[in-house]
Image (tube, rainbow, N blue to C red):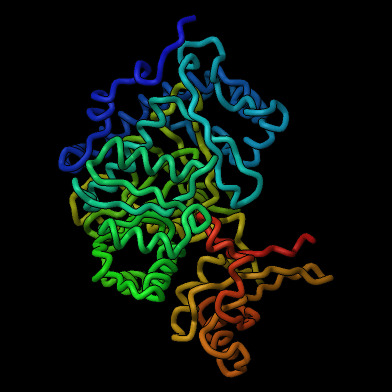
Amino acid sequence: MRQTTYFESFSARQLLDDYPVDERFAQRHRALSRDALFAQQDAAFRRCLARAWQIPFYQRLWGAHGVEPGDIDGLRDIGKLPVFGKHEIMQSVAANPPLGDFHGWRDGSDAGNVPLIFHTTSGTTGRPQPLLFSPRSREVQSLLLARLYRWQGMRAGDVVHSVYGHGMINGGHYVREAVTHYTQALFCSAGTGVETRSAQQVQLMRDLRATVIVGFADYIKKLADVAREAGIEPGRDIPLRMVCGHLGRESRAALSATWGGVELFDWYGVGDTGAIAGEGPDHDGMYLMEDAQYVEILDVDSGLGADDGAPGDMVVTCLYKDDIYPIIRFNTHDVTRTLTSPSSLGLNLRRIEGFLGRSDNMVKIRGINVFPQAFAPILETQPRYAGEFLCVATRDDAGRDALAVQVEVSGSSDDAALTDIFAQTLRARLGVEVGVQLCALGSLATQTGIETRQKPIRLLDKRFE
């Protein structure tokens, strides 16, 4: 069989026609009705479904739930298929090392006879997971992210400072490809604080006159503090005008202020799927990239479709992945809710609120679901909060769960009055009792990994020790 090379396996021109950027993107999704969009999604889903039936992982997964090929008649039947997630993928890897059987690379089909792009997840929730891409699916992912960046205002000549990690981790490479392949911005791949020291990063941003920073909010905020400690003033010495990253639940106003009042844009995606949704220039939730992704919001407990506006797990089907690794009903375990108000931009695309927390990091305290990500905006209401926290979940002998939070503060960490203020504020906002321990500046860094990880650890779960 002839070996197809990377650039022979897809047409860049066709990708740009299929997934337009800039005003062509906006025009298409103002004019395209929901019914017409669904018809396009359905046709793409049928191609993905046909490919998935050729792959042992799906044959086993769907067969175990009694599903046969003729049972699924298009996208309207997608709810008959079981969801899967990282757990099932890692089981596949363990049974069929080193890459598992959840893909169809080199399976003898034309779809599998293409180069393989291999990365891993960061391992935030456990052992790193293999991430596999065909050249076409890799480029679609990059194009979707570049679409969001350009829509949010990234332009030719921008100097983009990236704090996404590299190595085997997918994030930094994928973001670099998005910017370098589909924008005319200058990309600086600084990476995490381990790859390039924080003090060196802010000097680089000053010297290269960075205008955009991309990455996770926790570290982006830390870099502003490092800059000021070095006598470099964000907004003056570093002419940043945009932050395009993963903003979480922290105060947007506080993050913007640390960088001199820059405009903030949020976007969401995971390693397997690529970009799923992003904030537009209206700053009104995140628009789902529905020409490429079919997203369901499922109730965390029942697994059934959540009501509009109710929180639930994001379950994603990649409508463009019909070659090496089809992704059909992948449970991200990231929680969000849909927005029901109409788009002020006139786009016929659904919107989500954004990342609310992870259902597999959720702690249920006396019947109330609590996410670690919910703590940041509450802690920020106190001026002595220094920006770092760590939740600790425990379970007593009677099987009751408890939650405490360690909080870095400026000044003395021996302050009973401030401890009580934090505890009362958390109880009022969360509706449950939470223990509070004040900590000195920088004392949580080794546990949260703020300097070394793309996503700092916010929950230490001791319930099952």
